[in-house]
Amino acid sequence: MSLMLRAAVVTDLGLVRSNNEDAAHAGKRLLAVADGIGGAPAGELASEIVIRALAELDSGPEPEAPLAALGQAIAAANREIGESTAGDLTRQGMGTTVTALLLSGDRFALLHVGDSRGYLLRDGKLSRLTRDDTFVQALVDRGMITAVEARQHPQRSIITQAVQGGDFEPTGALLVPYPADRYLLCSDGLSDYVSDELIEETLAGYADPQRCAEQLVGLALRAGAPDNVTVVVGDVVLAGVAQGTGVGDFLDAATG
Image (cartoon, rainbow, N blue to C red; front, side, top):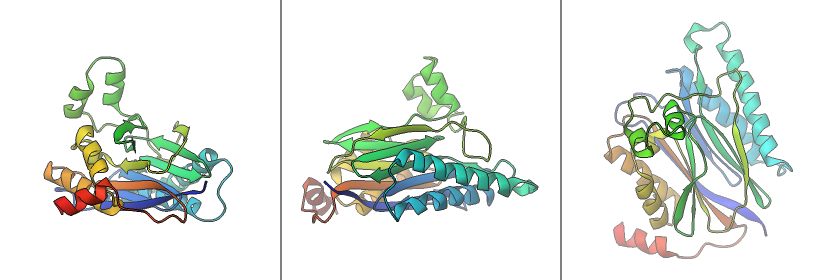
């Protein structure tokens, strides 16, 4: 069984920012999103460096060890970021989050650093694939605040690690993909302002990845998201098999 991705990416400045520090990739093998930190233009440069390094994995032979391949790409980007900040005061503190999924054969490798999230919609049910590397998530883990309280916490944007040219500990996992799985990667411009329940409803309601991604970004903007918002939606499909009409297509026609 040969699998591939049918994917789309949509990004927006948000309602306040004048520059976009997010970067993303939606390919046949690779999904990735990165949210730059350190201010313009440094944050933009960091996210671009990471996505450029990862995008090379979307062509050529499939890696035999996809998780290791992701780790090597991120490590190379981390070195480049470190070199870019050396001796340049305007780039001090430059870094980025990253969440990436790489399809290789019958395996899906996940690598995550920071607070950009990964989700899986399977059989209409949404599950989170990543844990935020944030101060607030640490409070939730210790039982000091609830997940509901975390959504409104004034320090929810403080991340505890990023790809910044120094040491970091990415979270990695190998997943088993199935045809009809839908994956979502997003910057916190979506997840901070749109509930998981509404994300689930939207992912299940729009069959076309592009239309679905547009709807999710629209939800973030209508919720007043001031931050950049970037969404990558990727469907696992059988290579060479035409996609038929499903429930989501019917909903598109009914609501469009």
